[in-house]
Amino acid sequence: MNWLSDNPVLSANEIKAFTTSNRLIGSVFGEYKLTSNLKFRSSWSTDYNSVIDDQFFSPITADASAVSGRAYTGNFQQLTWLNENILTYDKSFGNSKLNAISGYTMQETESRFTSLNGQGFPAGSGLEIFPVRQLSPKELATELHLGLFRG
Image (cartoon, rainbow, N blue to C red):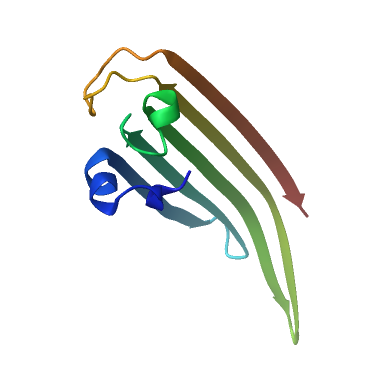
């Protein structure tokens, strides 16, 4: 796909492309002293990412004239969360100190990508909804789960 293959004015008027991206990253934690020597800490973190990409190539552009125009929409979403739970024991014995840590970490990532390609738009159509001769939907989803014990 070469956006510069057309007259620049024609490309500016007949090729439409919009991308929207959102991301949220956050963490929260709490710590509680169980005894004078033992404390518990739990933390949660998340990372959410979303990208939507929409493109339309009019049937009169060089990039889409062979297929009577083409449109594409794609949506990518990914959510990762992380949870850590840690016990810490601290004890002093005169000039010596003892520090022991034990914990468990869990993490999960889910990703999803969906897209829809269409071609064969009536002449003079734009971003409105029109019947399309050929649609090609695609979807891909993945998950990743991790757990780790520290002692």
